[in-house]
Image 1 (cartoon, rainbow, N blue to C red):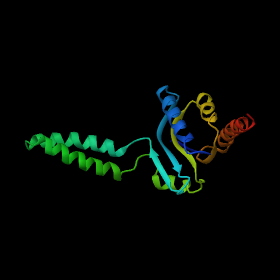
Image 2: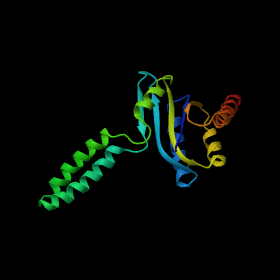
Image 3: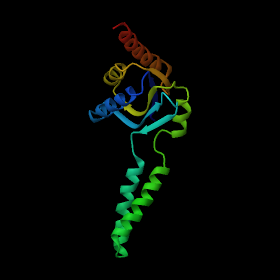
Image 4: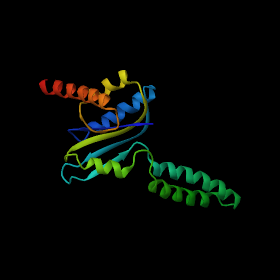
Length: 169
């Protein structure tokens, strides 16, 4: 079962930096990321924007194009089949949801102040002694977590230490 962790940051860009770090850690097999989403709450309008780690529309279009071309070969019209398949796949991909529920993310994100960002991470497996210090160097504050109380408190302490070190510097 995946652990869900959401950390909010005081600016609109830091969560994207954390996402890049998570992808690097995943390539190093230090974290098994099931899903992730960067959320930005616009400073002027206060609107919430979700930036998913997995673009389901593009995946659906690619898959649909391949299946459409194969079916089109049967009817001697692979290009038309590819076009129809890509369109159908893109629509299907945009309507589907993978990993962390978007409604849940939006509901939790309502607590964010304008001009902030957050990252939502669903982690299947994590090498804590290597990953937590990497996450802690970005600071932030826990917005939501499914971690056990002791683990949540330890992570919050790491994040707070980084925030206080940045404020005193």
